[in-house]
Length: 282
Length: 331
Image 1 (cartoon, chains in turn orange, brown):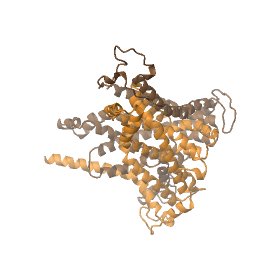
Image 2: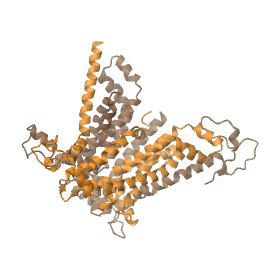
Image 3: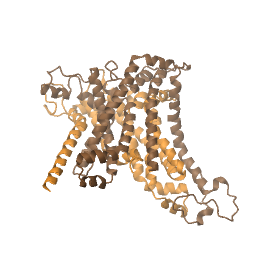
Image 4: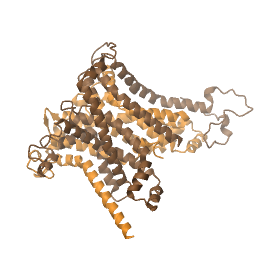
């Protein structure tokens, strides 16, 4: 028994050692953003100072600069607007499609669903050149409407796939009963299936929103004016003036945008993973 | 569309538990119901109406540009040009002769292979360590997930500061530990090999959490009694890990690798933010070269030709993924 206890203790120590090393490596840049945000400029650029601690009193100067003298809030607003509209488009397209492919189209619905999911593998870096011309012809370049049009191309396929998994778990008998009670198929979908799928819908909303904030390539390609930027491109391109890096404000900008998104995403992570692993995990 | 629900002829039959389509009509009743009025066909029609908008949207905004990418690669289309001409393989000939392209092609493979090996090894270790429930697991998981869930362009900016030529915290530590004299510490993003290593490590940092949670999903799906039985039978931790757990995880490791390859081979964000392909193309990869050529320099046709080199990888991954899905359908 004694040996067993030593062994379990050994596991625990090894586990925590592994976790500590990885957690520090993975989270360190965010700690670094945090400490840089509140350090005085002189403190940041004095090589003799220990960079891990505050050598001078903390300051809010970088945050003031960020909010008062840059377009950061404009980019945050743009990102929120684009996120909201893309969420709307995604729900309108993906909800009926996912329901139809799980319930109404028989065996080949699953195949079509798979095909739609596979379009998620077509990379933006293959499509961005032709799309840039399409956007130019439509006159949408340098407006947020360019990305409003294009972002659903990756949010819709993944959302359909997620929702199909969700609808499959609803017992058919529920809809059958509702239809016996006089609802049409469409009525059953709107009045019964959608309300009981709220958590699946919420997952799609969060997922779509986080994908919009993370996207970089399309936003970089289609939008080059400062006033139409989203956060992901505005911060790395427009907060750098000439060759001068305002590291304090830059880190503040990264931190403020990252943490809320990270928390939201984390809450719904298990469902996203279920989407990626459908088929391989039983 | 209005859908009338006059009770179908089959309504009196008991509901079919297996979901098999009910018979179209009862015997003895003359069949005059038009094709589109039978319940199962009406359901199909409604289904088609419900998924068509999404499919159309995807076909137009993914399918059309996908085809156009091939068309552009064989023409001389430029930004702002009104007409374009077929030029055959001219674009491919000229990119294959360009040193930048060769560099980018080789770099793309180095970038993908090394970062994927690191990601898979790291994710396997980390997922095994995270498998059981313990106090503080949620918080540890949150910390570990940060690189994946935060926007990558912002995470990469954080790294640009950490790897700064003058104020790098890594260099500060190296100097304090006397590995380097002050002002002679490495320029992480300024020297070709170090820049490549930095780009690879930052990308690994970004993808590791994603692969870890995918593998974690696979690990928790393994019935607990199998590894436990092995341990009761005297197999130690390592033997159970390598002979039971990892083999059972193989399909899920495959899924993580496949997504990882796509997310790495076709990504340019880390390279663009950290080095913009430099110094001297030493970190240039195919997607970033396609961007610089096709978008910034405005040579759409050459850019499209470069990005077509992503297609074989994409097709190979898709093929393996379909095989996997097919297998699990049979199983």
